[in-house]
Amino acid sequence: QITLKESGPALVKPTQTLTLTCTFSGFSLTTSGVGVGWIRRPPGKPLEWLALIYWNDNKRYSPSLQSRLTITKDTSKNQVVLTMTNMDSEDTATYYCAHRRRMVVSGKWGYYFDYWGQGTLVTVSS
Amino acid sequence: SYALTQPPSVSVAPGQTASISCGGNNIGSKSVHWYQLRPGQAPVLVVYDNSDRPSGIPERFSGSNSGNTATLTISRVEAGDEADYYCQVRDSSVDHYVFGSGTEVTVL
Image 1: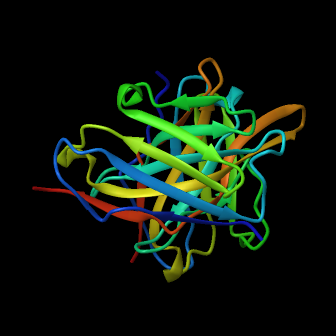
Image 2 (image 1 turned 180 degrees about the vertical axis):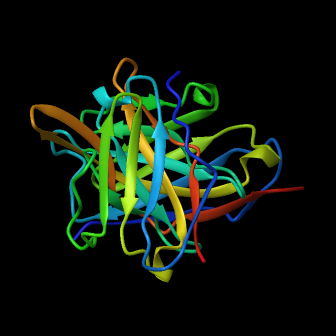
C-alpha cells in the first residue's frame, strides 16, 4: 500500500525559506518510471503543480516558480524534500506531495498522480 | 504554456447527472485525469487516461475526451459527491503538469 505524508512548518515569515519533507512508503524512488511531485492549493484558488522528481534524479519545475524551487530525494530514507525561497503571503497554501504513475493505455502514455498525502497547511505571515 | 479551463461551479439534484467540462487546445490528443477534493481530505484520483476508473471508484464516475473538450460525468449524483473536481494533463513538450481551474460541484 502506497502512502505519503507531508511535514514541515505551519508558519513561516515573509522572505524566509520553506522546507517541506514528503515521507513515503509502499514504493521505491529507484524504480524506473516512478516520480514524486509537489502540488499546492492556496485558499480559494485552484491546484497548482510545483515540481516533480524522477527515479533517475531528473527534475521538473513549474515555470512560474522555477527560480525559487529546489526538489531533492533521499532514497535511503524514502523522502523527497522541496525548498521554496523568499516566501510571500501569496504562498500561503495547503501543500501536497503525490506519487506520479506512468502507464501506457492503447499505445499512449498517461502520467497522473494516483496517491496523495493529506497535505500540510503553510501560512506565510509576520 | 498549456491551459485548462473548467466551469467554476455545477449544481445538480440528487439522482441526476453532473457533467464537468475541461477545455484545452486539442486536448483530445492528450490523456486527461480527474481528481476529487473534499475539504480536509487528500485528493482522490477518480478517472485516469480519459475514461478509466481506479479500483474503488464507483461506476457512476465516467470520462470522455475529444477535440478540445474532456468531460467528467457523475451519474446518479449523491450528497457525498459534493466536492471540487480538477482535470489534469501532462504538457509533453516541456514535461510539465497542468491542472484545470477547478469546478465546485454542489448537490442541491
